[in-house]
Amino acid sequence: MIPVKMCFCLILAILLNLSSVSADRPPWDCPACGEPGLTGNFCPVCGEPAPENFSVGDIVTFGTYPQTADGMDQTPIEWIVLASDDREALLLSRYGLDTVKYHNSKESVTWEQCSLRSWLNRDFWNRAFTSEEKNAVISKEVDNSKEQGYHNWNTIGGINVKDDKVFLLSYKEAFQDYFKDNEARQARPTEYAIARGANVVHGYCWWRLRSPGDTQDRSAGVDDEGTRGYASVAATNCCVRPAIWVNLEAEEASHTIVKSGNTDAEEAEKPQHSVKIGDTVEFGHYRQTKAGNDATSVEWIVLELNQDEALLVSRYALDVQPYHETFMEVTWENSFLRKWLNSTFMNEAFSHTEQSVILEKWTDNGKDQAYQNYILSGNVTGGNETKDHVFLLSNQEVFKSYYNDGEWIKAKPTAYAQNKTNREGQRAYLVNGYGRWWLRSPGKKQTFAAYIDPAESRNICHSEKVSTTRTLVRPALWINLTYGLQSGMIKWVSP
Image (tube, rainbow, N blue to C red; front, side):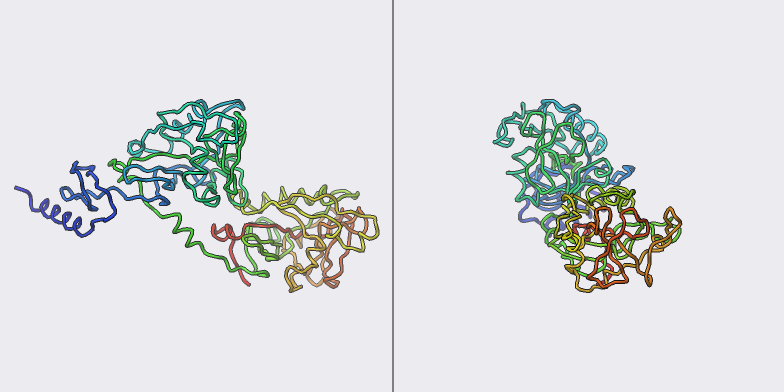
């Protein structure tokens, strides 16, 4: 005789099954009791739920791996479903999880022989998955034929391998089979990968493929723009996006693989920013109190917008520094202040993750960027074009009025900058609370640099000896505003 409680559970399971039949679910066998050919969402015999019905583009969590900068966590790994027939699914990690060499030494190598293959199937395998989770992963033959590589590269992928649990996508799989466009191929790194040295541009990383590159000692990859690339097999700044096949019918899969979203839905739901020129945003932290022992959020004024990109200048003058440490002829390219902004200031003001939002841009130092009366004298030059993350505005950039309200040109110093004394015991030069701040443009002589004087009209540029230590610094930078806002690293403050 069937116990009343069991009888009730079976009846409930049957009712649930009948009321929730999935029209598009193929027949499935119950992993718990073995009942074959089921079509509903629950087994009518034992009440076991049907295996998750995954679709291409779904995001699932499975396994864990460090993803914070200090690497002390075990955060669930998010995977994108690249292919699925409701029995098996191909998963690719959503983010670049780590930075690992393709091979331990720079030499000709194939996927079969490379050290990264061993790392994925030993170190990563044991760190990312429990014993139960491992039972849901399928070993598949990995195709390394010529057709899997880029046809214009005269390199070989080596023999096919049959015992990989974890692998990388091939060039063909990344560029022909599973992604609709470059944007879909782009990948962001985790904070852990960034801390491990990932090369990040505009928030996106370069990730490896298993196919060879243009020479046998290079591997193919996907760059930050989602386009074709290659890198030395011994390079240490390339991210790894592991791929696995999972058995959706395995009992372990129903317990460990969890659907959490869909890439198409998330793309449609991305908020569009409404930041305008002249608005104030917060980004990064820098000392701003008199004592200088704080890390206060830095406020920036938006001077220019170009689609997802924005040019920012600090709302307040943040520090006092000489343009150059010694009184001598110098240009922006060789100045002390350029080096200080792109090393000391950048590393103090922004975390590794925040630095991924900052764009490296070519900085124009041509004649048009300087005060014309100085250039016409024939005694000065702005120097060569430079590539910078952080820079100073030029004379032309200030006075061409990105932002029509000229009030932004007046700069008050922070308490830290105002009270910082130079080697002579002097503080920043101020007029009615506003200070002089450096431009990157040359002054009236090559031993002088231009600055904005708050006591004068906005259309007048002055210059001072490059070694002066009473002039303020207002850093400027270009950022990926959309990424910064969506990630929460940049906060809109006010219009």
